[in-house]
Image (cartoon, rainbow over all chains, first blue to last red; front, side):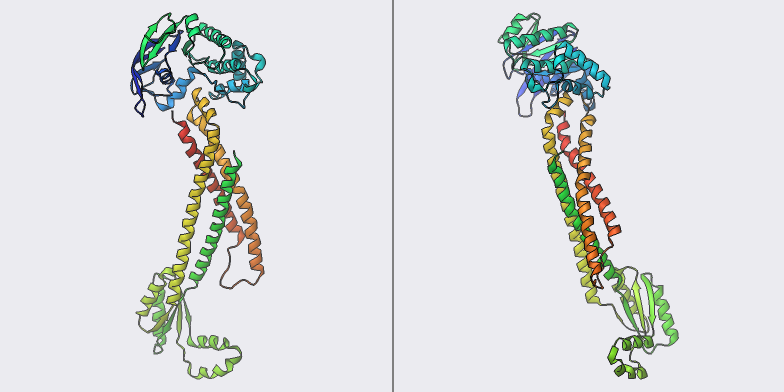
Length: 228
Length: 275
């Protein structure tokens, strides 16, 4: 599903964020990415949906070779990837329904298809009764569920989460985690960067620890510990 | 779409349109004056009738000559005496020994060729003298050319200012929608999909911005034209009739508005579409 081979990333300002990473993540896996702030987690994640390009090395996502793909193909890659952020990134002037439908309108889907799919994902994240609410009328956890619904509405094969529980209290964080696990059970690959020790230690999954731009540890059922 | 962008286009196009009308009228004025420039060829008084015919043919055969008019000295004298009005009688005795020359009035096909044509005719046989108001003529060309160049530079300068202003105001609306664009890109929108609303916005903005200037200029010019043509208009200065001028200006302003709007919006959206 996701393969990296000797990937390096050096920013124009001279910071080298990723220093020779090679990994292989299979379809359907649930993977935590842990590491201190500035360790290179964000760069690692951004390279998968090609927000950033590696300075050197090969990245394969699904059937896409990110090094050789054309600029015009990036939208196609992004349609197979759902992304969830710490700050939700919802449009404040749109209702819950519209925020999710927005992701499908971009693909020029038909009105009835959009309606059906949006109600389906709202059902999955259990927010069907709040479809007409505006983001600011929702709690943080609810907003994050809307952003998860938006990430999965186009049936991506992988969902990337960049600290999805970073702004949430422990209880709400668990709701989100159970939701992600549910989505993972349907066969979607989940990649989650996190600082949440409790979650990583309790919900045991594969853990990739990044330190100083390198993989310091890759455990099939690891705990939260990036100082090796 | 912001009020600011539309008013920026409106103000710019208003000024551009006003200048355009001024320049078109000055051009028209210059053309009229230039068309009036003629060469008077005074024929040698010794010339026989056949010599005069030859001279007339020679002048007509010049490629740069548009029209040749022959005024026999008797006719010239009649015109002169008639022009004296009450004092005409004192000049009646001139008829006994007409002091005038026969004259060819020559019009060059291009006003700029007048001087050259005059010189060529001057070298012909049986030509006593040529006159075409050299001094006035050169000053006139210098003046009208100057006005045209200055006007063109002004219009171009204003257009660039307009594009710059529109690009900037649209950039503001884009920054306001930056988050929206970011999310669109994240969920896999193509650049074309993201771009077209801004394309439409720029187009609308430019066209909307051109409406008020067109209305104001049409109304203003019509009023102005009616006022000056009602009053005793100076004989040597006529204004362009509103119909054709206003159509031209309106069409130009709408297209300039549209082009400037679209260009400005695409310019400012481009930078947000990278990766």
